[in-house]
Image (tube, rainbow, N blue to C red; front, side):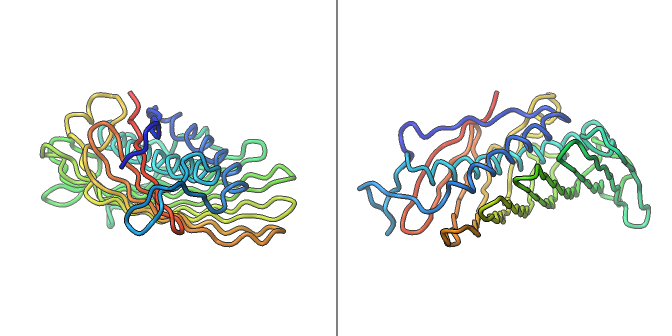
Length: 284
């Protein structure tokens, strides 16, 4: 059952600015969410051996914000991957970098795009790796009329320190994208994100482990110039939160099953003895 009123709206994508904007919003959510999220309360509905949780509970609301932000960021990265193929874009990355490079290894067929920058209290590093494949082997640059698979890996490392709080985020995504000559482009990928937050009275660690399965996109939508979203597919996701604070708050686990459709995605969440369901609408 989807709880009435529990509908969120996904933000649209705008490369290259969209990648950094979403990251900034997401990190801001982490700073607030890790301070507040512990365990959640419930109401009186029951099902599947778990009690339906309270949709106004502060811990649930923070967990909801974190998982939607994470999923939104993953969908953004897939849009970055599509952008690379459709536009043959080999810019090192979305930042005004202090150092940047783009190199190609003819033996492995991998492009590596590197950039880093320091802006005030924040330092960024991005490494995107690209490999274009057709029926006869690999392509130096993508030929959209013959490419059959695109392998895409991205690594990000962000460090923020303002004297009172420090945030360190590292993330890795590896995707195999196929079906460019068919009606549907299929994305299979795994993603890991680790965040460490330190502040005066303790700290928190946040870990995500996710794996997309058969994420389907309409091929013709890739050429529209607009953000594209999956029309089917699933995402099992585990979120682990470990607090290192004066009150000795325990490690908290949240488990999510995300199911994509044409207009958005459904999230089923479980933590402890409770469960929640809600929908997220794609941006327009």
